[in-house]
Length: 389
Image (tube, helix red, strand yellow):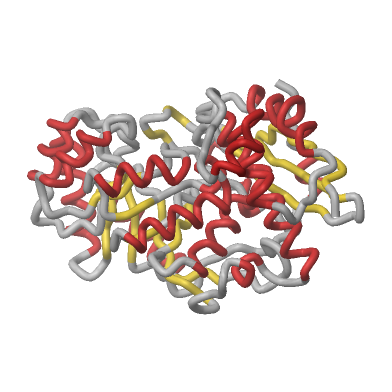
């Protein structure tokens, strides 16, 4: 079962004005992703996704070009079932053979950023192919699933202090969620403004709903510590990306400053970054993005690290369908997983890109039991939203 074709597209889906939101990334007017199709010589098709931005905040032209013109041609003819071998081949480059014989990584210089996003897309598609070829869901290949449905949290929360309670409350009404996440940080300016919104949310929702907050890495260490102090009586479930992912020592300082659990990882790539977060005691929750960290292969290694360090695992799944469904299978199989991110912003890349209905029921999401990743791409929708920019 050899890889025969590799084709990626920049998919851009407009978001209707009434459903757009504004955060520190600006106003998100489209949802964009690099969507990948790999077909084997015996006709099995797998779908993958690579990411280098949030929503309409980035340009996918370079990533798509990298996949189609460099990464794709290198793996044509490879055994599609050799998932780890393909991963190491792409990561280590011309020294892949030496790295395999030596038993340790000898990665290419340009291994981070777009390269890892491209590897992620390939890896996700190959897991999809393997599951389909064997007639089993990916979670079964990863060792099994905890349950047929797993808890999810409603991810959104951009409204001002006067409306945030109503906005988060609507998530609970729609999907029965008992955990919600709201955005804080640079979008508000000073920490006391974010704290005011958090206090308003807690007052509106009461003590029995878990509230998490996400700063997208936009605080300084000092301001993140100020924010924790201002909301210390709000019983937050976690504080996500308080500071830049490049400042792991600063993140550890924030974690040590209070009792709010710290989460991070959507900006990180490979198990090595997450090892550093664990060793520095910088976080309590690992949040790798399968479409950026290195795919399902690397995300599952990261999940094992979380378990080894007695940390928790909750992948970042603000993404398209291939990434989101990858996260479902990872959560199902990983011992350290505890909750699934479910986007409550406008996300046509999950809901319209696939034929299946994706929804939360009583705050839980179903784990697919169909072969591969368990979704069917709506190819007419995909073709209608290919962006040539």
